[in-house]
Structure formats: C-alpha cells, structure tokens
Length: 240
Image (cartoon, rainbow, N blue to C red; front, side, top):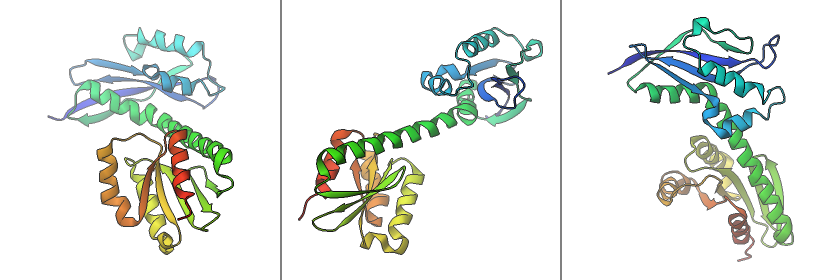
C-alpha cells in the first residue's frame, strides 16, 4: 500500500553570511505523525569526507547535530548554522526506515559515493604506476590516457592494450567500454579490458562477461590490489 511521507532536509551553513551549505540530516514523518531522524554521522566514512572540506568546523558540527537531535519540532528550532528546508513529500510502499535511507542517499550519500569512486580511481592509478616502474618498464610502454583508463604497448610485439578501471556492476562503465570497443572498430586495433577495481563475486563477473563483455570483444581482469596489477601486466608482457 502506497503511503505519503513528508520530510525536511537539514542544511549546515559553515558561514552564516554565505550561501554555501551541506545537507547533513533529514526529518521524516509518516501519515500518523511518527517521526524518523537520520544524520550524516550515521556513516563514519561520510563524516570523515565532510571534514576534509576546509570550511567545516570539526568541533562545532557534532555539537550542532547533537543539539538538533534533542529538538521535538521544527517550529521551536532556531540556529543560524543548521536550517530546515521547506516541507516536501514522497510517496512510497516502503516503511519509514527504508524511506529515510532512500532520502539520505538522494540528498547526502550520493555525493560521497562519487568521492569514493574518485578515490578508487586515484588508488588504481597510483598502483599502476608503482608496479609498472618497479618491474615492467623494459617490456612495456605505459601511456596514461586519463584518470580512469590507460593504454600499454608491448615493446616486443607492438601490440596495444587499452585498460579501463571499473566494476561489472556499474552500467556506465560497461556502456562506455562497449562504445569504445565498437567505435571505429577499436577491437581490431588493440586488446580491450575492464579492470575490476571493485570486488564482485564470481557469478556476477561471469554473467557480465557472457552478456556484455565477451560479445563486444572486451576482456576482464581483477585489479583491486598490487598482486592483481602485477598479474595483469605480466599477462600482456608475454611475447607469444
């Protein structure tokens, strides 16, 4: 049965005379008036990322969040740093806890997932450079393309290999590689691989390979640590 929920987003203004703000919490009510609160500090990773912004007061924000947790209603709350948005609504068949988590992702969590993805790309790039410079400079030529992909040339065979960081569960990663493979028939010029920097179970990997990667001339290789990276470079350094 579909239910109507109302909610208000809590915005944190580090500087009260500035327009800069960060969404840090949500108050949610069901049709019976039951209230659910959810805040950014439910995730230690998210609050750590937020504290990386130089404008965030690391001592003041936890105090503000604890204060607003004790508040009973929005009408009596007043603070220049934490302010409520206008009332909005959402219709859902899910219970109040599930709706709170959905709204948290929509207003708060999604930004940190993007940051986490960028961090994974940066780590994969760093691992690639370290392993390449340590063992494979004599056999391979590493050509950096951008933050999430690179190409390598085998110096003996002159074969070129294009490698893209990603996940078998990320639709955008798969679509981009499929497009690249088919564009101008790139698969006839180089070997193309999806490098899995996000862990996935064997069934998910196999399904993605059968349904999308193999039909579009794309290989897959795990790439979540130094050992995976070394194995990948070793496989493409073969002269046969």
